[in-house]
Structures are given as C-alpha cells and as structure tokens.
Image 1 (tube, rainbow, N blue to C red):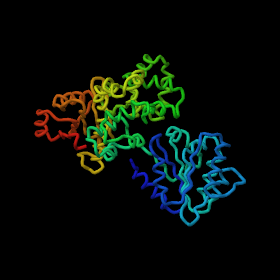
Image 2 (image 1 turned 90 degrees about the vertical axis):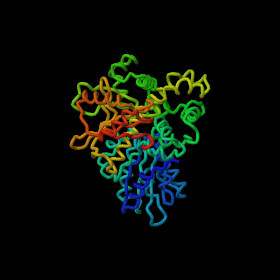
Image 3 (image 1 turned 120 degrees about the horizontal axis):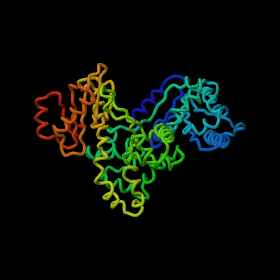
Image 4 (image 1 turned 90 degrees about the horizontal axis):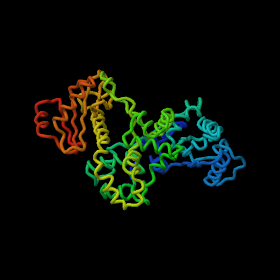
Length: 453
C-alpha cells in the first residue's frame, strides 16, 4: 500500500501545535486521502463525518445522527453550531474533527462555515481542536472555496494538496519491477495512489492491463469516463474533445475541424477540463526563438485518461468482443513504446530535480520545461537564475541514443536561440559508440543510463 509519509508528517506537526487549527486537505479522486486520514487519526480522539450528496436539510439530519451515535446523546436542535457544541474528546487531549467531502455541505448551507469558524475561535467546544476539511473536488477547492470562505479564509492555518505521486514512489512501491516496467506503470497509471494500490507488480505489465483495464470486471475498466463524469456534465462533448486530442488534434483549429464544435465552445470545455486537471496547454520554455516555437498546443494531462483515449476508446467495440489478451496484442503492444516517450521525459526531469535538491548539478535550477518547435523539440531545458542552461535529451524507444540525435538537438537549439554548456543525455537502452567516444572528450556531455534513474 502506498503511504503518504510527507503529508502525514505535516499533519502530525500541525496537531502538535498549541491552540486550535483549521486545515484544508484536498486532492483528486483516487488520491487516497481517506487512507491518510485513517493513519493520522490512529490513537487519537476524533470525530469523522463523510458528507453526502444531499439537500441541506438531509445533510444536517445525517450529521446530527452521527453526533448522537458517537457521543450517545439526544439532540434537540439540528444545526452545526449545536453539533460542534456537543463534540468532546473525553479528556485533555486535542480532538480532531474531520469533515470529509465538505463541499457537499458548504455549497448548500451558509451556516456551516460560520459554525466552523466559531469552533476554531473556541466559541463552541472549549477544548483544543484540529478541524480538517477534506475534499476530492480540486476545481471547486481552487476556484470557488475562497469566495465561499470570504474573510474566513484568513483563519485557515494550512492548505495541503495531495498531488499525484512521483516516479520515485512508483519504484518504491513496485520492488519486483525493473526500471523499464516502472516507467510503463507510471505512464499508464500516473501517480494516482488508488490505482497503484490495485496494480500487482508480481505480474507483468500486459497481465495487469488485461486484468484491470481491459476486463469488464477490472477496477479501471470504466474509470476514465467515470472520473471525468464525476464532476463534469455533458460527457459526450468531453469525450469527443479528448478523443480528438488523443488522436493527435492538439490545436484549437484542429479540434474545431475534427469535432465540428465552435471554437468558443471548445475553449469553454477545455477550460473546464483544465480546471479538473485532465488537460493542459503545452507552453514552450521561453527562449529567443519564439517565432520557431509551436503555440496553442494541448495535451491530456491525466496519464490514465490519456492511455484510455489513446488505446481503448477508439476500439471500444472490439473491447467488448475480443478477449483482453487479443485486444492488448492487437491495439496496444506495438504502440506502447511510442506512448511512453513523453512520460520518460517527465521521469528524466524528475531525476534532474532530485539531483538539484542535493546540489549534484553544475547549475542550480530555477525553472525548467520543454521547448516544442515547428521542426523539432527540446525535451528538457533547465535554467538557473542567471539564465545558464542545462539541456536534456531523452531516448526511450530507439535501440540507442546516437550522436546523430545530438546533432539534431544542436540544430533545434539554434532555432530556439539557445546555448548551453551542460547536456544530460538519457537513454532507456544504450548509447552508440560515436557518442560514447565523444562523451570521453567533451565534458559537457553527461550520459545517464536508465538504470541510474
């Protein structure tokens, strides 16, 4: 099981502080915030309520019933002020009050936040209390919550976002896998902990895909569209746009021609998908060669959604008619390496960021990104505050990273108007003899074998 040690440690530090705390905890569906909460609450006094998708009146009744059940009492008033008046730890220890999926209350009941702020201010329960408001609605948390809280936003002590896990977490979670298999698992699942916990690293990649994604009984069989539909309506429009992006139509005008939707309509729906962290705009690293860069390119941000729309959605009829193994061999096996190239670049950047943290790079990275040109791409540009550059070239699918590839990179750098004294060359397999010889002579070239990641 994947355990978020960093976030749990942060929660423990907040718990140990004197006085009352108000903490916001959120992350996308599948981030396993519930597991984090269970581990954090172990051995502590706590009250936990999971909000329902219900009317304000029904929600209040359900909350009240939970209070009555846990504290063995009868309520005469059903409102949040009364609820927080009646909670207790039973001793001098700090009480943790967790309201999970609290957005279902906050959207419909203005009194909820008022009562929470009273609780924080010791106007209700007198003992020390840590209030945790948790949510799996990223878009709502980041776009609407602050307005709902108003001046109360200043009373929040800490906001913790549960980000997708890193590649290093995948490697730690799957000790039976080679680095290559870990890259593939990461490219398919991303860092979504609930997905990772179902994956069996004692089975190969093909077996896991067939069992969890391609089988009707699989945990991830209908997950992509369920996830999108969990907060977004008009799934038919979103599916059409995502299918087009996955098929290579990555500019607004391309999407307009492919989908038949107006540009204005596409822009609105793309904005919603971006807020939900499903798609993103690819912004090239700013260089002097702006006229040679591609602009207005979109890509599917969510690894698993991208996998589904790239490999499964276009062949949905065959998904239901073919055995999973036949579907995999027909539609996935030959194209999987090409799909993984993008994620290998992300992993190589993560590796550089780790080296940067321990000061093992020739420059101190201030910002990093990718440059997408009209006739070539620079996988990684890392820059320090003085604008010294470190360039990364990542080879996943070719048998060797060759010096000819490096020469093509140098040509693309001219178009981007970039110079660098440092080159990190990553290869999933090997390097050709010419490049190995050049690296011995040219100290600017650092060769990184995938096993080092």
